[in-house]
Amino acid sequence: MTAEKYLEQVKKIDAIILNKLKEYKRWVDAAEGMGGFSVSDRVQTTRNLHRGADAIAEYIDLEREIKELKRQKNEVIGTLQQLPCDEYKVLYKIFIEGCMLKELPSQLDKSYDWVKKKKRVGLKLLQDILDEKKG
Image 1 (cartoon, one colour):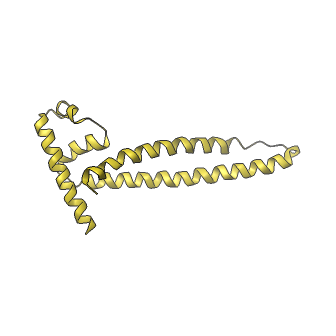
Image 2 (image 1 turned 90 degrees about the horizontal axis):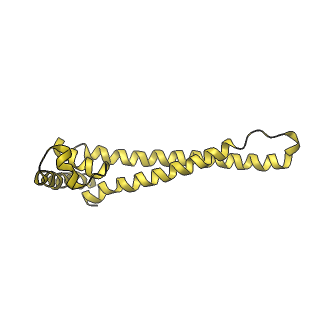
Image 3 (image 1 turned 30 degrees about the horizontal axis):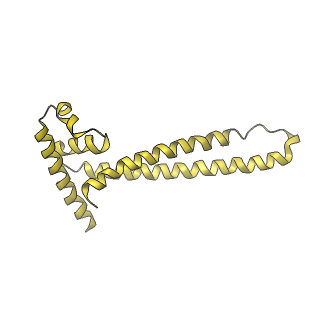
């Protein structure tokens, strides 16, 4: 996997986390809406308790999935943190924060050429790290 593709996966991870958080909220709301049954609702209560248990199981599974996705994102960021400071800042702003390359010179008080060079060097250094990890 190229260094650029490695960093671009963070955008997808963020999108998946956002969707899973929405789904998680729906399941939590469904589980919380299962309380307060009367004795006269025996058949309905049993069915609703199963639905409530299913909702709880779903949101617990989603919690695990979200935790794993956050771990994956943190792994990418941890790898990125191994770069020298300037290369790290440029790549972090582009791939983690989602800044456009043309926005960075003003944000970093640097020239466009400096930003492009730091991006290129940073991706090369990151690729070296990734290749070394592969063994």
